[in-house]
Amino acid sequence: MSTNIDKIQSKLFQLEDFLSFRKALQASGKELVFTNGCFDVLHLGHVTYLAQAADLGDFLVVALNNDASVKAQNKGENRPINPENARAFLLASLSFVDAVVLFEDNTPLKLIQAIQPDVLVKGADYDAEETNPEAPKYIVGSSEVKAHGGKVKTIDLVPNYSSTAILKKQADLRKKT
Image 1 (cartoon, rainbow, N blue to C red):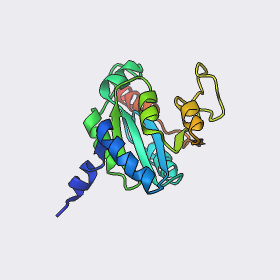
Image 2 (cartoon, rainbow, N blue to C red):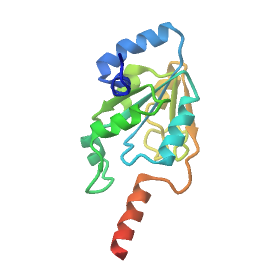
Image 3 (cartoon, rainbow, N blue to C red):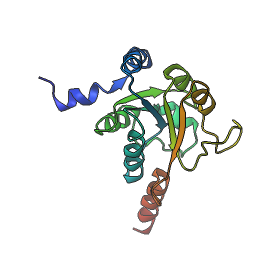
Image 4 (cartoon, helix red, strand yellow):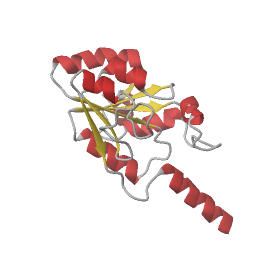
């Protein structure tokens, strides 16, 4: 009998294993949605964003920055707060997240090239129409996804919700006590 923990763990993939699974998805005609991020301190903004991303296709895969990749992004000296295995497990526990794949690079470009998603999604702080890879609002992998007939979409962010803002608020509260 499969437990809930087993169900969650079955959504955690190494890239090689996921690529085999991806072939089965393509053969069945299912539309794969891809997004990525650190998802360090899971909050309402993340959950809303991921739920909306899942609505854009049949299968949502979340590429998750591993710990070294989060540190390389200079999000703060104590980041990530939660280690990669905990972040991956929490994401996989969401019913609308179908797979979680860790990556170690600064960007998920190699994963996007390997997986070839049908839909690439980022928050609306990026621009789906930006074509200059040097532009801050450029969505990494967008040209590759569009080149094989995929779509690139953005989702509005929930105002006042970000891991950085939550951690700052917490630090400010500590200073007051």
